[in-house]
Amino acid sequence: MNPHRPGRRVAVTGVGLLTALGEGGAETWKGLLEGRSGIGPIRGYDASALITRHAAELPGFRPQRYADRRSLRMTTRNDHLAIAGAALAMADAGLTGPTGLAGAGYDPERAGLFVGGNKEISNPEHLLSGSLAARDEQGRADFRLLGERMTSAFHPLYYVEGLQSAALFHLSHAHGFKGPNAYFHGTSDAGAAAIARAYRAVRAGECRVALAGGADDAASWWSMTRMDGLGVLATADLPAERVFRPYDEERSGSVLGDGAAFLVLEDLDAARRRGATVYAEIRGTAATRDGGGLITPEPDGGPLAAAVERALDTARVPAAEVSYVAAHGCGTRLGDRSESRALARVFGPGSTAVASSVKPATGHLVAGAGALNVAVCALALDAGAVPPTLNLDRPDQECRALDWVPREARELRLRHTVAIARGLEGQQVALVLSDPEER
Image (cartoon, rainbow, N blue to C red; front, side, top):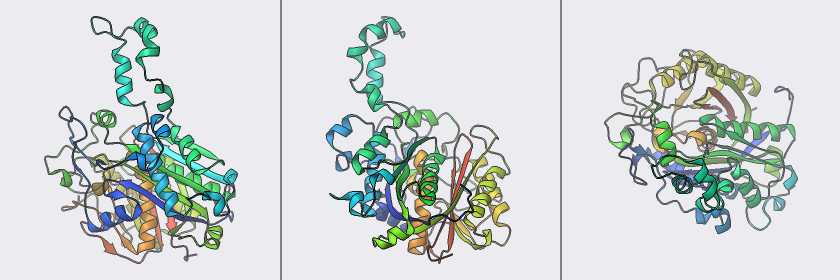
């Protein structure tokens, strides 16, 4: 589809957030504006063997509130977070209840579902119990034993619960989505790419309503052990709530967090006819690939700048009219500097745009992080306020592209915003969200 060809206008009508700050968009948004952080010492398991022992966990999360027992038996915690985030978004959009989509005049066959995730394994306890059964007397892996004991050693639903895209089935089953669908696997880019795909589907008329976003159990034992050795997590000897410091001289990396961020997108005219709340309008999106290398982006931020510039071009929004950027702000030395250089290239000196990273408050949601930034833009446009970048006490001289809204939220009249997502594997995603009254 030609990005400049007129298409349907796409509205954000539901925001479902599950973070360490609370369940629901309103709770997380309140925590962000209050400057609270959900990061603390890891308590869900013994983290003594890890270099980084902080995370933004969800100790009070009860998946039984969002799914029946049968669904919970067939899924992992990663899926549970997606199920919860999606349910919160649908409720916020007023599309739940006995009539659901049909009650709002939507054909389920033209309802799209797009999910981003980073799920890799079945329930870890089921993996461990099965693996231990395949060890010989010397403790070595024995595939002959595995074959003999397979049916009794592994959980009956081991392979079903381990399906990477299982959330697609469970969300479709719960909410009746039967139209176009896709699963995006990755890190920060995954949830943002899912929302971008949903935007294009609604704009082109492929569907009239879509549910899209991302989720990740990034604070789990499995995820932490994977990421702990990559050199991207915070190592500073500081209190847990202070250790995540994007753009600051003393930054030392990210702190991971469990969570989900989902949005409901609708044809703007249809949303208004049914009296839905319209938080924002998505105007454009673009993605590029950073070929610098895994985990190490191009130092000049060129690929990210290109993604933002192309998204603004498809949205027909001049860079000078952007009010706010929901920045990636991962807290690594190269990541923050390259992002700052990218934004400096796009917006230039003297820009009045401001930017912030919410990660020090929610933790880095990995596959849900980009989707969270899109939600932040929608909520900021609706509320006329932007959340702060916590713990930014001494800005790095090489990270001075924009005003990062340090430490305290700010009331601000917003017209156009940009949400950024940067994947560890090099994907750069940008979406432009605007006040629906701005044309």
